[in-house]
Image (cartoon, rainbow, N blue to C red; front, top):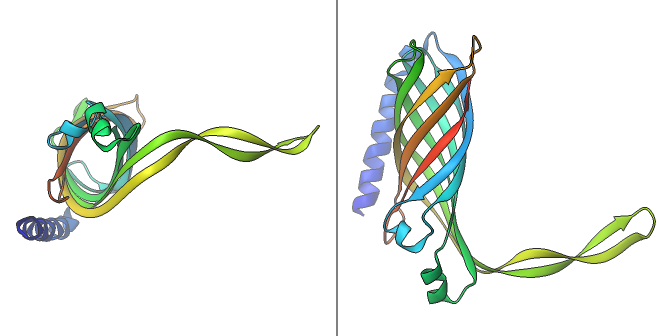
Length: 213
C-alpha cells in the first residue's frame, strides 16, 4: 500500500511538472535517440541474476536549448545465476524487463561542446521471469531442387514463466557530443530504474551508448 501511495504521488507530481513546462517548449524541436549497452542489476535482483545483462532503448519528444520532455522505451535482458537455477531445477533462465516512461529533461550545458543533461520520470514496466531448457523443433524447409522437407532447429523450451506489470520511476544523467555541424550527437548515459514489484522492488542501472538527433 505504501508503494502504491508513493507511486500515485510521484505520477501526480510528474504530470503537474510536465504540464507546467509546456510554455517553455514554444521554440522546441522534435528530438529522438536510439542506443544500447550493458545493464547492471542491483540487489535484491542482483542476488539472483548474473552480474551484467544488456539493454536497448529508444525515445522521442520535444526539446529546446534548456528543457525537454521525452517518451522513453527501454528493454533489459539479464540472465538468472547458477545457484538460483539449481534451486528451481532449470538449466537456464532470464529476467526480461521493458518499460515506457515519461521523462522531463534538463540540459545543463547544451550550448557548449558537451551537452550534459539530467532526467527523471516514471511510467509503466513489464517484468517477465522465464526458466527454459535447450530443445529442438521440427520445421519445414524449402529447396528449389527438393521442394518442401522437414528439418530440426534448436529452440528454447519454456519450463515456467511469470509476468507482472507495475509502475516505476527512473532518474539519470548523460552527456552528448555533436558530430560535426549536423544535429546528430553521440551520447552516453546511466539511468536508475526502480520498479514497484512485490514482495521486493526490481532495481537496475542500464548504461546506454547511442545516437541522438
